[in-house]
Structure formats: C-alpha cells, structure tokens
Image: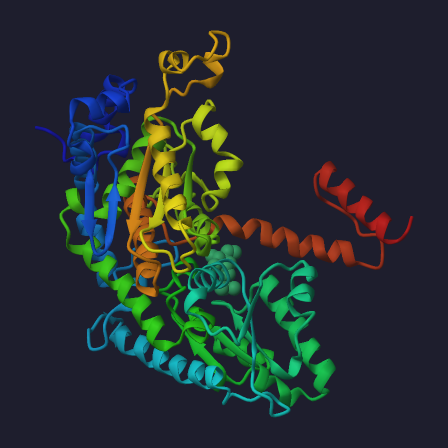
Amino acid sequence: MTANPTALPLTQRPAWQALQAHYRQIQALHLRRLFADDPLRGERFVIDAVGIYLDYSKNRATDDTLRLLLRLADECGLQGRIEAMFNGDTINVTERRAALHTALRAPKGEKIMLDGVDVVADVHAVLERMAVFSGQVRSGQWLGYTGKPVRNIVNIGIGGSDLGPVMAYEALRHYSRRDLRFRFVSNVDSTDFVEATYDLDPEETLFIICSKTFTTLETLTNAHAARDWCLHKFGDAQAVCRHFVAVSTNAEEVSKFGINTDNMFGFWDWDGGRYSMDSAIGLSTMIAIGADNFRAMLEGFRAMDEHFRTAPFERNMPVIMGLLKLWYNNFFAAQSVGVFPYCQYLKRFPAYLQQLTMESNGKHITLDGSCVDYQTASVYWGEPGTNGQHSFFQLLHQGTRLIPCDFIGFCESLNPLGEQHALLMANLFAQTEALAFGKTDLEVKADGVADWLAPHRSFEGNRPSNTLLLEQLTPESLGKLVALYEHSVFTQGVIWNIDSFDQWGVELGKVLARKTAAELNSADEPELGHDSSTNALIRRYRRYKSGG
Ligand code: F6P
C-alpha cells in the first residue's frame, strides 16, 4: 500500500522526489530551446487576473515542472491551509494565534467569527474612526496645542510599523496631499529623529506612535524623544494629547506613555506586524491619500485574496509565483531573489518585501518541531529599474550565480514626460529578454568582435524572470501587488511546513542589546561575561567615551 504523501516528510513525498529527478533532466535545458520548441510559450505561460498580467514564460520550467510543483502543493495540503487561514484557524501555532490579515480587507457586512467576536465589524469600526480622524487632519480641523492646524505628520515605528507605512506613502505619493509633510522615524540612531524633525515646527506636528506591542525599544525611545521635543516647546504635558496619537494593540502601555486612549487606533493580535499596512498601522497612509483611496487599496487587497482563495492552482498567481521561486530555491540551489520595480514610486517596495518574505519564512524548524533538511526563504533584495541596471545587473547577466528575478512595470505613467515612459518600459522588457536569451559567442563574433574578446562580450542567458505588468500604479493596484506577495510567501511556508507568522529569531539580539546597553552606560567598570570579542569591543567603546 502506498503511504499517504501528506504523512511523509517533505523531501520524501512523491512529488518532491519526482521534482528532483525532473531537475536532473532539465537543469541544462535553455530558455532558447523552450521558446523555440513552443512558439506560443510567451502566451501560454501567463496568468491574466484581477488586473495583473503575470508572464512567467521566462522561467526554466516546462509543463511537467508545473504539473509536479502543483502536485507538490496538493501533497502539502495547500488548499486546506488556505481555507484554514481565511477561516481564522490557529495557523500561527507557536504564538497560538490566527493569521487573519485577510479580515482587514473583508467587506463591511461579511462575518468572520473569532472566539465569538465578529472581527470584520471590529475592523470597520476602526476604519471609520481612522476616516474621521484623517479627515480632520487633512481639512485642517485637527488643531495643535496652540491652535494651529497640523501640517507635519511623523510616523514613529519600526519593522512592520514602519516599512509598510513608508512604502505605501512613497508608492502613493501621487495621490497624497501635497500641503502635508510626512516623515518616518524608525532607527534608534538619534540621527533619524533629529533629521526628520529638524525643520519642523512642533506647533504643527503630529506624531503617530505605531507599535503593535508598544514595548519595542526603538519605537518607545523615539516616542520619548518626540515627547521631550514637544514639551521643550510647550512646557505643558497637556500638549501631548493634541500632538500624539497611537496605533497599537496595547492600550495599557499607550496610556502609561501619556497618550489618551481616545486617540488610540487599535488592531489585533491576529494581525502580524508585517501584514499590517492595511490596518490602523496605515493611519499615515490614510492621512496622506484620504479615506476613499485607502478603501480602494483595501479593495485591491480583497480582489487578490479572492483570487488566491478561489482560482484553480494552475491559474492562481500567488501559488504559481510561490512555487516557481521554491523551484529555484530548493532544486537549483538559488540563494536570492531580485525584485525590480520599474517605477520610482515603488522604491521602498523591495525593502518592504524583505521583512515580508524573510521574517515570515526565514525559519529552520517545522510546525512539528523538527529541523528542516531543505532550504527555506531566499534572500530578497532589489532596487527600482533602471537604476539597478547601472549597478548590480552586471552580476545578473554575467556573474556565476543564478538569481531569479521579478520585474514589475506599469503601462501608464503617472507623470508622463515625452517618451520617457516608453524608454523605461523598453528597458524592463529588454532586461528580461537579455537575461533569458543572452547572446552567444557566435552571435558576438558575427558582429565583428575579435575572438579574444568574444567570451567577455557574450551572454549565456538562461537567467529566469517573471514580469508583472499592471495598467497604472493606483491605491487599488498597490493593494493587489502586496497581497500577491503575502500569499506567495504563505504558499511557500505551507510547502516548507513552517510557521510563516512568528518571528522568534529577533528575540535573542533584543535581550542581549538590553544587557549590553546597561554595560555601556554604567558609571562603574562593569564585570563583563561575554565572549572575548564582545568584551573587548565593549571596553574599547567605553574607553573612547571616557576619553581614555
Ligand atoms: O522585532 C521584530 C518585530 O517584532 C516585527 O515583527 C515587528 O514588525 C516590529 O518588530 C515592530 O513591532 P511593534 O509593532 O510591536 O513595535
């Protein structure tokens, strides 16, 4: 009797083993051959759904590859896990929580019950409060302590409480109120706070303290710096309630800090920091673009959620993207993924994806507590095109590593200037073509290049990429893009059988930093119990500081 594949360890499942055998057969197969053998490949290997056109034809994958990857998804029970996520099951097992970020964009009136509470009703109650507050700030009705309208909004947060807000602000700047200034402070390096506020008038400045836990060292330190900065100007603690609002799940700590909980916008422990830009954590986004645009962004998220939940896997964009990246990661031993938005507004999108992908799937212990015997998350990185082309693209084209890439582009520019948009998009298309097909030694020599120089000037090609093409960057299309990556990360986490929603790996450094900070600041020479390297570094720092 054949064993139930879902009961077997991942690498012993039939689909995994078949993929290994299949990899050995096609590892040398060139994209030039794949395209020559199938003239319709560029039209077949695409998914056109919810306003995104995904061309995945320039991947080193055949129909068989896809069939086997889809079989692997089935053997890993992906459909059941998707349902579990949408239903609010406790899929974040190590923190004993649901991962219900999809409820943040559920339409008003839909019911998702968690522990007897309709979370969608809660979500909409907060959205409505955010809409009122952001309307007051945008219209100049929200006045500071001295009666001046707020004109500067400073978001203080880190990780998911910063990367989402700053990415969304930059991405949707075109839709933002230009008479308001937005700044984002995250680093505990005081330079971040000082530079962000140096030209601001406290009388016109509102701080949004964003922290799910309201215990994060960096955020609380910067929040205290902000309070001191205000009190220095106003000399009255009453000013805090006009110049500070909080976004958090922790009312007690918010109140201890001195922020009136009437000025607190809540969210819930079932929403992870890196999945929270569409919750109250997006308050700065809503102030910038307005409540209607924020709702349009939520609709974009929702459209992709629906697609992920209902589309058959062979036409399911997050599933196909997740599986193809897993194909390179686990079978070609690719270590990283490059993401290149050909859109200046998306300049912070790669940084946002770094937390989403690596904090979610950078794990080596499975849900049942054993150690994996396969690779998990890739290293994500990227820059907007065309800038990257004049920097690291050399390595993509002629280096020794295989780096699968995602190219993201829009058909319409939000700021058309002559032919510049066509030039931008021409570069995007040209890069994917050059990466895939290269230029052979013979072709190079046929161009008259000398024999000795030809190896340097030829391109082997066969470097895979996806192209994501959208009509225009709008709040809605941004929501779709973010949800696409969220769900492709989840797809991979399910296959790797890890908890994509915890982040225990960040804890040890935090504990050590607290201890070390006490040692750096202590008036007496502290007794150090670290390793010899850390002890010497601490002593060295202390000597510098004491002028010795
Ligand atoms: O240290 C990692 C982390 O916990 C992230 O997961 C989170 O997005 C970030 O810190 C900020 O946490 P908080 O919103 O609780 O301040």
